[in-house]
Length: 260
Image (cartoon, rainbow, N blue to C red; front, side):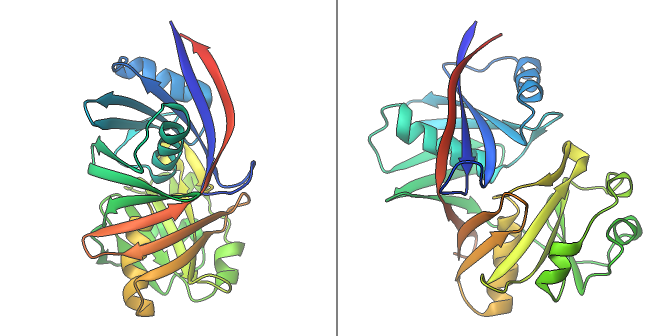
């Protein structure tokens, strides 16, 4: 069986920036094991599988080791592929997922994700996470799937080198670290060795946690954010209450066929 596959750099306006994602547009679902094996073989942070049904799409996301409930950059990449290569002539698409309905609209060269806002609560930071990061945060929060550690200086975010052997024991999908930014409203990094990704270059789903926090902290609903990985990601963020908007660009790196 031959399948068309795309690789897209999401949240970037140039190749080799942002976060690469694989995208497979399917006519029907493959077996769970086959989709997992394709994602493992791709060895990207995420591979998205998408099928069209009537006037909307269904999307699923896989890391190299697990299916996940939500992925922003692979959704952005999937929307880019749909708009660029499938003949879709609308400016907005609707996707069904394990995290409910997701919408993506096209505004010029930008794609705007509309995602549900995460529910977060302030917590005492778990001991194993303190040990993994070595530098105590100012605050610690927990969302549905991730921890979020807040620091008071962007330089700290840039300098942190986690102990992944300790971090992998955390009972969460991943850990976000964040602070106010020097040239953006806020900055972040994201670590998820628990699902096979030591550091994710740009994590759209983490911004469903970051946006409500920083909106309240900064007293604004529209913000710019940078994820401080080596590849860098630039995101335009808007807080809408129970939904958030996460915008960015995407660039195609590869179009090809895989044989499975």
